[in-house]
Amino acid sequence: MKNLDQEINLETCLAVNPNLVLRIEDDDCALLFDPDQGSVQMLNCTAVEVWQQLDGERSLHEVIEALKNLYDGIDEVAVQQILSLVQNLVDLGAVGVWEKN
Amino acid sequence: MSQTVMRTPRSIDLEITSCCNASCKYCYYLNNPGVDYRDLPKERWLDFFTELQRCQVMEVTLLGGEPLLREDFLELVDGIVANQMRFSLLTNGSMMTSAIANHLKSTGRCNMVQVSLDGSSPSVHESLRGPGSFAPALAAIRQLQEVALPVTVRVTIHPGNVDDLTAIASLLLEELELSSFSTNAASSLGDAGKYTPDVLLRPEQRLQAMRTLAELDQAYPGRIHANAGPLADWRNFQQMEAACNNGEAIPGRGRLVGCGCVFAQLAVRSDGAITPCVMLPQMVLGHIGKDNLATIWQSSPDLEQMRKRDHVELKSFEECCDCVWLQNCTGNCPGTAYTRTGEINHPCPDACMKRFISELDEMGLSI
Image (cartoon, rainbow over all chains, first blue to last red; front, top):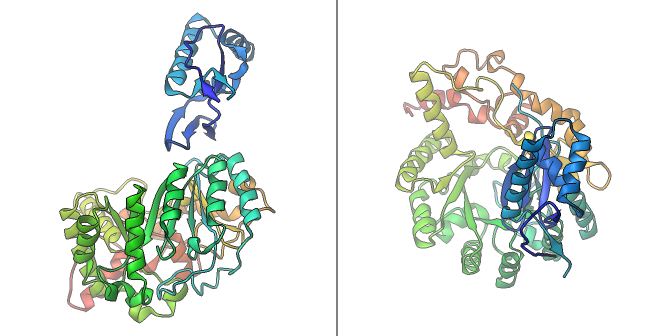
């Protein structure tokens, strides 16, 4: 799979990088492990929820709607925080638009 | 007080073979009554690696025996890579080839290779490791360096090399230009228990090793590591002494907190038995392919007991209650404590500073 390095918007269908391992440590923390680089990023609960929603099938808008159905209190501020989080994950190469080779 | 237990272990030590082409006199593995000397077939390990991936284990360490004696060694490495893990390798170097070094490098997943080297010359290295073992170890280090793999060396300190430590450091850090090496000392496990006069450091030798390594630590800052043995003892002593002199207690100490391994890792013997640590081969928690790793990790009564060692106060032990370092001691390694005393919830007598200083005192020496 190849990252198309596409700029994200609400219509983008994002998927997680299949080469990374999400390791749930406990109820409060998860690690995003890149076995090729040996690097580890720490994710909080919110980031894990977002990560688990990014299936490559639904648009970011649909993902946010799904999160709104799961959790109360996701207002416009929270949506912006989610978008910022997703952009960070994209910048890390952890999330992207992937095409099959 | 207790640390949080993660859902699955982060790393696993895998004794992929019980076979070895050396017969080092201090081997903790050789003739250890806790070890069942049988090797699992490749397929069993590969199946287990898929379970490790499901458990999101991040890294494994391959050891033995001598891991490179397995003809399917590289297939096992490929299985680890295919299951999204990284790996380290502990070897005596004798079976290392350029092809193996290149394969390890090509995976991009090798954290490090540790080669055992105990002396700066054949006579010193081979005194306890056996004839003909020095040149292959040195050649292995060079082969690994040629392909730019992270390579380190473990020096096991014993009576035969305690006078050679400065030369060893010079060989490893200057001539071979390794970034670092680590030290430990033989302890009363496996064959070391049978050969104690040649193998275990006498008090005056332990003191000599501590002093020499402390000097080398100054000369090569940050380049000599130790989790056990004379250098670790020296650093621990310095820390405890400083705290005592300042009238302080090191936070979290004064209890059996000498090891945090059971909060992050497990080990698997060559026969597939899952144990808390390679130093505790007799404490079998289950078997790979039969028992679920995550269930063992979360529910094993033995692991639960070990994780509660930090509830045990050192003042509850008669030999500790009048110790000046009572509030600053960790009780040290549970594995050697179990071997020496038969109890997990016991401080390790081998690492006891009070006892060591008393032994020195009887000899007219002081730390």
